[in-house]
Structures are given as structure tokens and as C-alpha cells.
Length: 79
Image 1 (tube, helix red, strand yellow):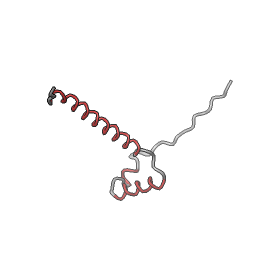
Image 2 (image 1 turned 180 degrees about the horizontal axis):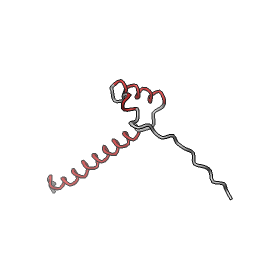
Image 3 (image 1 turned 90 degrees about the vertical axis):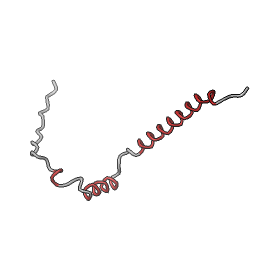
Image 4 (image 1 turned 30 degrees about the vertical axis):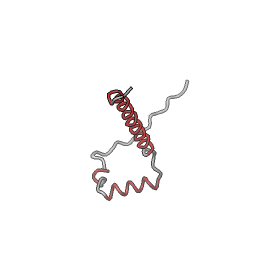
């Protein structure tokens, strides 16, 4: 019994799709690990880098209109 390529082509497709799925899942796992919150040293370094690149300037930080002062709601007395 001689087997030809026509017998193995579905297996080749399934194996290649499984390999691509594994690579895709490992890519998502790696990107999720990089989204952890930054500690204070890294946060200030990223802020300084953003300011030095010009992504943040004084005009973008100040609001267009001054915000109204927050007023405290009176507490309701318990009956």
C-alpha cells in the first residue's frame, strides 16, 4: 500500500493550524503580563519620557473651563 500526499494534506493543515493557535495564545499571554500596573519609579520615568517627547504639555494638562467646587451632600438622618 503506497500512500500519497492526498492522504496527508488534511493532517498537515490541522497541525499547522494548531501551531498557529498555540503561537497566538502565547502572544496574548505575554501581552497580558506586560499590562501589570507600574510601580512609582517606572510611572514617573514614563511620565518624564512622555513630557520630554512632547506628548504632554501645559496646554493639554489645564482644563478649558475651571471645574466647579465639589459640594458635600448633606447626610440624611437615620430614623
